[in-house]
Length: 149
Image (cartoon, rainbow, N blue to C red):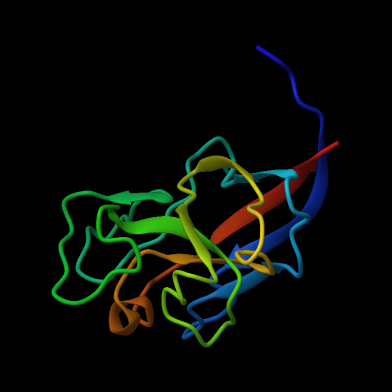
């Protein structure tokens, strides 16, 4: 297995404040470059956030497979409460135009290769939840983004 070397790009809190859905992480991803996104343990414990209606202790960035929603999730086949990413679009978008954006699951650990045109642009991070339930999320996660070099 090849070992990759990583360089820090940014650290951010998701969501950055209550009522924010898509949090800008990186202004522009270089086409073809590898990026690693992680939610690292804090004080030797998994970081947790609490989607509305879930257990009070919350869930990790992998989400809570027991939670269900009536309404549209950005990624319907992914657990409610999972950390998701999107390349392209804006902070005002929902899931985004599928022809121009790239939506993917992040969870606690993800390595992606930035896609080619037309699905390029900024990297955004959010919780996989309905728009109205996203506003009720309690807590936040500290996320690191790194790039291979």
